[in-house]
Length: 187
Image (cartoon, rainbow, N blue to C red; front, side, top):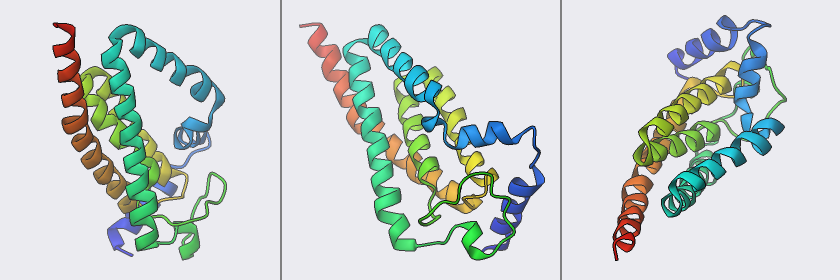
C-alpha cells in the first residue's frame, strides 16, 4: 500500500472522527438508502426537472441514468474485479469502521465513480445543478474514507473514472440530443 494513501486514510478515518460528526458522514456515505432522500428528494428533483425543462429534462434524466450505469459498469464490473484490492479493514489496519462491514473489493470506489459521473454530466446540462452535484460527489467520496470502507486512492480513482465517463456522455449524448430537441422545436 502507498504510504501517503494509508496516512491520508488514518487522518480522515481517525483524525476527523468525532461522535457529533459521525451521523453526517454515515448519512452521506449511503444517502441513496435513506428513505426521505430516496423517496422524497430524488422524486421531487426529477419532477422539478421534468416540469421546468420538459423534453430537454427527460433527455437529461435519461443521460443521467446512462452516466450512472456506465460508471457502475466500468468501476464495479470492470476495474474492481480486475484489481481486487482488499478493503481497509481486511488489510489488518486499525480502522474505525462506522458502518456495517462491506464485502467485496475496495478499488475503485463505486460511490465515488457513480456520483462524480452524474455530477460532471449535470454540469454540462446546468452548471448550477452540476455545482450541487459536485459538492455531493465530493462529500460522498470523503464519507467513504471517513466511515472506513475505502482508501483515498480508491475514492480519487472512482472520481477520475466518473468524471471521464460523465464528460464523455455529456459531450456526446446530451449535446447531440439537446441539439435535436432544439431543432425539432423550431420546425
